[in-house]
Length: 334
Image (cartoon, rainbow, N blue to C red):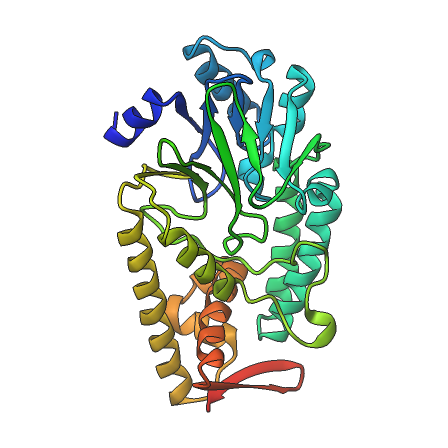
């Protein structure tokens, strides 16, 4: 067992590694053995995930029915899919960020509205219509891995979750998703960070509708996910954390070094995109194809979000300009 997991276990926090059908692989859920017995995140809505979760709980001497609280870290289906099943079986109190609660309570409607934003963005940034149609169908098929649930306890940024033997501070750190929620154990200097910070991969700030529903498209703007994420990372970098428990992969024991590497990666990618734009005006899809080839087709919305995030850095600095022609946006050197 990695030293970080041993430290967490000594503090009563146990990683439950749950399978997902997605490229990211297994998702880390965390069992907090305190009163109430609490599960942070659930895994996707699948029989395999539920079976492995039940076995992981049994290895700790617990059943699903013993859960008193379920906390959802953010809106992605690999983290929330089993919430309704688990809440119904256990009667556990479901907790989520206050602004996330309406989305969690209407998961299907939320997913459809997110897909509408994604479709509009893909078409306006040069992704061919047949690719957009195919991706929309794939996204709808993924909705079965998620679920809706009633949020019994809305959480607020800066609020707390009380246990018998600890208090966790709730921190809203949007970027990877609009609803990213971290739990901070100041006494033990342990940060439960979900997908906000992952050691082996850079969390993709996926463009999503802001909490509250407006997409930004109404006034010609769009959500600036990477800019928001970088500000959240700056706040996290200043925390005196000694251990970060992520939503995927192994614990992070030097969060400042990982965050600094992420900032450096952002700068390198922005510089590469700036060079491509300097050669000739390009749409975001054309930039993605130049960077990743066929991956830009199979993972179109992920790569589009990645490109637009770094273009937003260049736009903010005045290094590129945005022009729309014939319904497609292209970027050119300023």
